[in-house]
Amino acid sequence: MSNPSPAQNHALHLDAEALYDSLLVGIRRIVTPETTLVGVWSGGAWLAERLNTDLGLKTPHGVISSALHRDDYSSRGMSATKDATHLPFEVEGRHILLIDDVLYTGRTTRAVINELFDFGRPASVTLAVLVDRGGRQLPIEPALSAARITLPANERVSLDRTPEGRFQFHFERV
Image (cartoon, rainbow, N blue to C red; front, side, top):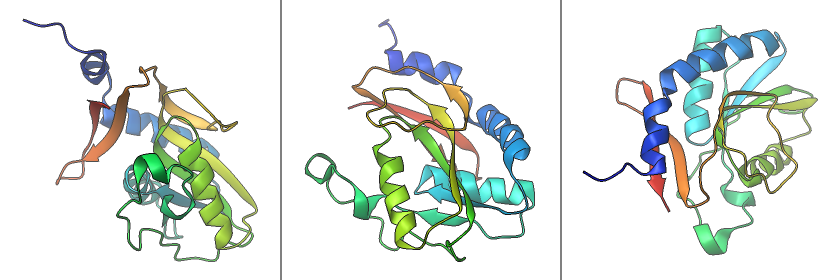
């Protein structure tokens, strides 16, 4: 029998549903009636949708894509996220709580903030993530994260959603 890879070891210890519950508790403490949730396509969008429902927020959540503002087209290519950005509210002057599943280098966060400002100037932008895996290349830190893990650079973690709407993590070597 072979030894499990580091990614498999992490997968055994990360319960996405339990981390979601922790994230929900933390967000309850920082959300105000003026807060609007915006989820980063795709895992962050799933989280924002469920958080918006669980928090009973009156303002609909938004979804934002990083595709048009990425700085790594040569290595990643253009994402197939046609019409992924959907902000059913005025961004100008709004307090945005940006939700993402995994924070790593900070490049996706930078790209979605640029996309957000294409729609107006929010009063504030706060970042909350399910998992912070460190490894930042830009000075971006979440105000809230449910977990902090360390993975080798050649491993990736992402959030998946089952057909029943439950969250789980997917680990892979890249």
